[in-house]
Structures are given as C-alpha cells and as structure tokens.
Image (cartoon, rainbow, N blue to C red; front, top):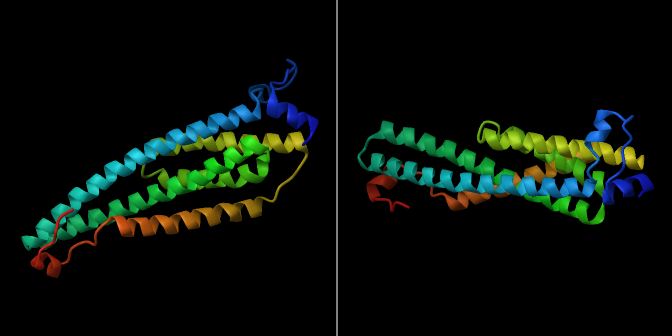
Length: 213
C-alpha cells in the first residue's frame, strides 16, 4: 500500500486551496466513507425488508380472493386475481434477489474497511449495486434512487484507490464476479418464493376445497 493511499485511508489529508474542487470534496478518509456506505446499505436493506413483508401480506389477500372466486366458479375474476398473484411473486423475487446481493456487497465493504483491499472488492460491489438499482427502479423507486447515490460513491472510491496506488484492475473479471453473485442470488430467491407461497388454485382444487393461508 502506497504512502499516499495509507494517508487517505487512516486520516484526513490537508488539501491546498489550489487543488481542484473534485479533490477537495473527498478529503474525508476512505475508511470513514466506506463505513457510511455500509450504514446506508443497511438502511436500504431495512426498507426492502419492510416492503417484502407488506407485499407478502398483499399476496395473501389476493390469493384468498382467487380461491373464493374459484369456489364461486367465477373464472374470469379468479384468473384476474391469479395474474395479480403472479405479478406480486415476481416483485417478491426481485426484492429477495436484491437483498441477497446487497448482503454480499455489505460483506465485501466490511472486508475492505477491515483489510484495505479496496478496488478488488469494490469494483464488483459497484456493479452489483448498479444492477440491483435497475431491477428496483420499477418496483421501489425510492430505494433505486438511494442506490444510485451509493453507486456513485463506490465508483469514486474505486477511482480514488486507483489514483492513490497506481494500480489497475480487470473490469471484465469484476463484472463476471458481479454477474455470478446476482445469478446465485436470483436462483436462491426463486426457490424461496416457491417454498413460501402456495400454488395458485385451479378449478379442480377449488371444487375439492382449499385451506386458505
């Protein structure tokens, strides 16, 4: 680790007035900025958890209405509620995927904070946050906007680490790492949705009677 980077990591640097505004903005130590980013991500996680619980309750209500419509042989209404249930499940899967992926980002940032291996961990973390931000844009816009700000912070940390150490990193490898994490999170989320939500009723199951959740 270079002397310049060590200084940036552990203490505030005295910045001459002659330096550019961009340099002045980042006088706060990298370690402190990473700690704040982890805190922000944890707050986003809490919001996602709250949204998850609300949407699960919405699914339960829609599912019950679908069952009752099937029992009443109101096929058109049953199909409408079944389609809504399917959409809700997609939203839940997106939220679960996002939560799992962000858990990996938080773990990486905590590793960076403790051991200082900045760009090697932050580059894929930034890619993950960008992907999660896009997925949540149409689901929870407020969270997506927060992740946009966090993404900018991560990008600036990578650039600053590169300038301080003179190192370069393999962006393609980082992208592959991020894609692997997102794929694994998506597969786990899909399985969790299958386990958590009952199958939608069909005409035959409705005639036999279905225990409502």
